[in-house]
Length: 178
Image 1 (cartoon, rainbow, N blue to C red):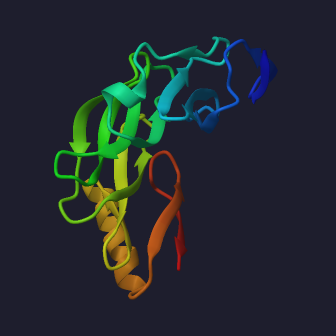
Image 2 (cartoon, rainbow, N blue to C red; image 1 turned 90 degrees about the horizontal axis):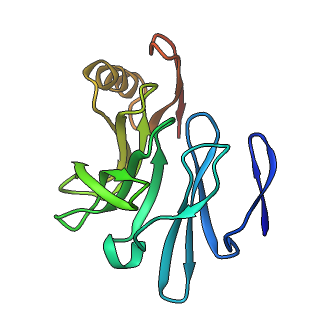
């Protein structure tokens, strides 16, 4: 048995987790998945919630999906989102089924740049994607968020401006610039 830390304290896991390279939590801070690798094989350990045990997904990732770069489970769901190679050869945003360990529908692929990351809104849906072309950028899917980003960029030209926090209603935002 291996010990790990969760939001409810130290717990044990009967599965070998010594080769886990990344742990992923949901919006509530619950550790929900771990990506494992050993030799030329990779796998996903997953659990639905904090009181559940980790289990290997039914399908090994090495044989079913392109290399997945980033995961985000949606709180209270077996679904979430992942970054993986898209049909155009760029890193793209997909839906992801954690229970089956498989990519779902393609959500967004930029035809000029790989995606560096993505943000989920309070509702658990994708709010925007980050990518780098001549500089770091954020593409917000919501028109109001896109307009706020454009206003910040216009007020602080020549800088990389990123919204780093926001109230649930998006009425107040915190920003960072480089």
